[in-house]
Length: 140
Image (cartoon, rainbow, N blue to C red; front, side, top):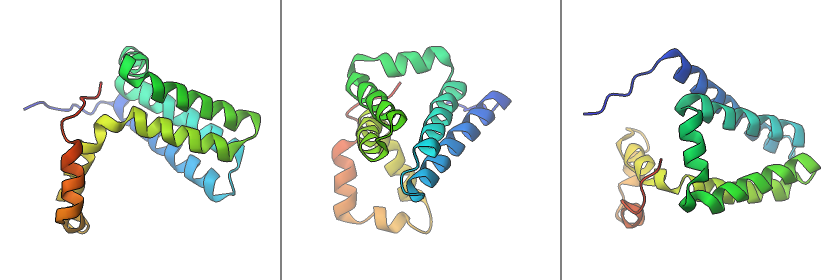
């Protein structure tokens, strides 16, 4: 069994990632405030970098299979910076889904084991949807 050691650097990285997601959501709630969304994006990317390390981050974003997601995320961030936050968030969301598509099966297994909402994800229709994508790609 692989052990996941939680040292101080990883705690800081997860905190930065969480703050980045929260600030981005706050920017969306505040009618697509480009400043909050940009700060959220910077915190998210820096949090991922601090959590898994610079070398692993570069390998993840520069992998050939993740190229489309990386470019989409970067173009979306550029659109947010120049003042088109709605278009930027749409492009960023597409890039995020493509980049992290390898993590969806792991997320599905986790959600099936959550006590309160797990029964929803264990329904046959939803379970067959998640089983279709299980084992397609391995992230990082």
